Length: 120
Picture 1 (spheres, helix red, strand yellow):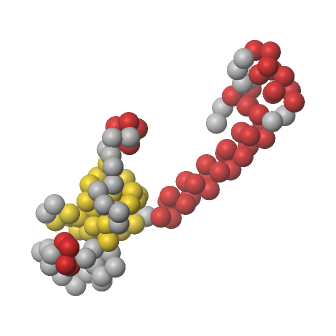
Picture 2 (tube, rainbow, N blue to C red):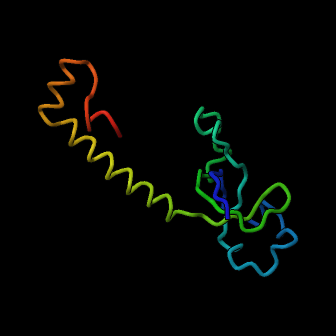
Picture 3 (cartoon, one colour):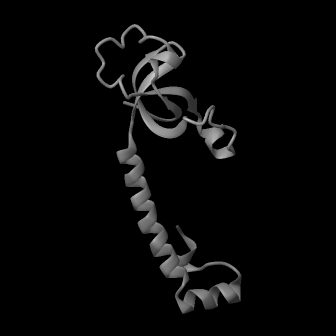
């Protein structure tokens, strides 16, 4: 299934109303999350999205049952943590490369990072 970046809120029957058609018998509905708004790539890059309320959050999600104005979603924190771990390792290698004396001397001489220190 396709994964999206979405603004999510926990499902509450008092706030969101009774379950929609197609949601009957879904065990993930109790304690589940609803996608209130899907963030596009352009909005994410430009920062034009804002959380709607205090209990909302930006999550990587997979749609479980789209219906009406909301969609029942499954949070995909595993992939987010995997990305964070890989990025942390890559950033650590970059900092190590940039903190070596030859890289600092070339930065001082040429005004930009050269070699392995130039790339993330």
